[in-house]
Image (cartoon, rainbow, N blue to C red; front, side, top):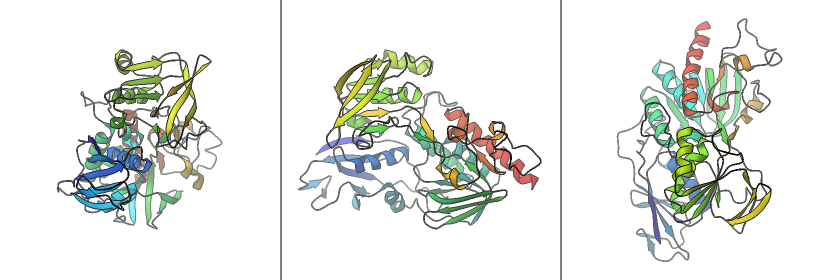
Length: 433
């Protein structure tokens, strides 16, 4: 058995109901798992993105004797200990959240506004809507924070001169929204949505139904895949998407690879370099200057444990039960390198599958079209005398904010601003009757 890492994120207070937080000390969580476990990674990733502190041990098969005071005989790993006692064997993130009391039915049937997604845009909308007296529920199928929640350090967000992790920023925003009265319906996926003028309905997978007069769609984006053979096979077993915050300690003294040339890739490289022997940043373009912020590219290029390969791309993956090697194309020449960890940060595709159930129009790339970006054809069925508001979709009272919106600026600050703006427009819509 070897000890891995102790996480020191500021713990969120455990919820006592759908939105009211207690002041109790957060429970002590300890995870016992085997090395290279897909299920273990899923749990570590969820706990890390949720800003939940935990410690971890790695057990070596066969499981005989005790690890961290726990007899592993006939146990199904990973095992989660809460306050020193074995509580869950091989749990899903949803089961962990349920056991901690984070998954509860909605407190109300009807709200003024429903917010879909708890990334920066959705969290901002929740803070401003609740602080201005609106009854608001935020529906989130995964961890709070969205894609930004996986960022190891956000250094260019206003008001944090020393930077802040995406998970901490998201949890601060969640707590702020809750104090104003927002309700968070977590680990719930919608199975049906009806979007009409002053008639918003959502049916969740557990059968809960929520109604509202307006909605803000802030469902964000999902990490784009490389599109390679065996990529899905190695997901969570050597191939990871995003900054790899939870996986970084497992990269100690190894050579790891990051694909991408924008800020998310640079942040991932810097975070991984604190653990890895060498981090190789694989950039498709000729340089970092056009895709990465200047402050970050300077740090990346001068870091002694980071090397940058430009005009390069990953074209092949290979291994056994996990990733063992990658094939690079550099200026048309192929070479194969041993690799156990590959982190992919190449932008994202919009989370807009839900739109197929509604009359909300998308642009050619699948992002939600709003306001002036709606084409004349998309506005043909618009039923009101006024024009759609800037963040309003093709359906009156349905707004979009953040990365999911067509032509949005993919920055945390921009998403937060759009979330606040969306609430202002919701007020205008509701006051118009």
